[in-house]
Image (cartoon, rainbow, N blue to C red; front, side, top):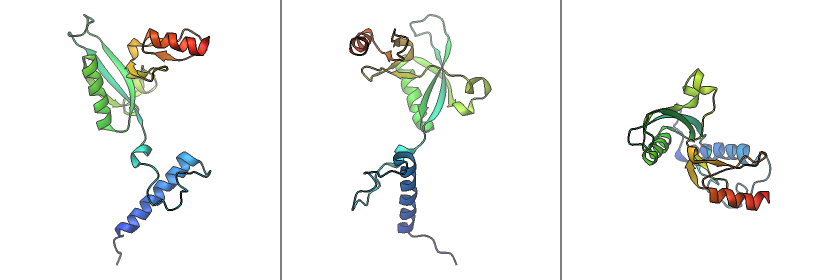
Length: 165
């Protein structure tokens, strides 16, 4: 008769799997200070940190309450670990931008015309101040060898003064 594993055995298996994942993803076989501390019985990282981020697509329609008078639909892509996080991101963006959510799906589930194309990010990260902003408000760096984007002209000017002069 097979016995059910005890909680200690399940916990040991879990720690073994997480340690193996950590060595594979973080250390790459080298000595890692996080995992090799003496007397450390705790897991060195959170399980949430190893969940994979999936690329998602969201379709929006700007409503009549928008500054733009005519309605149009647009697509944006973003990264999230699961459905609820994706919903939270999309709902927050729709509320801030005052647009209507048409749909959102994992990009790999969208089908042929969507999978093979890249779309603007839902929100971009300013290279200079690390603030999130809407993609349509982005200001690219005028230097051709630089791929930085900025949320404002002030960040752009500070970047040029720091990096390109």
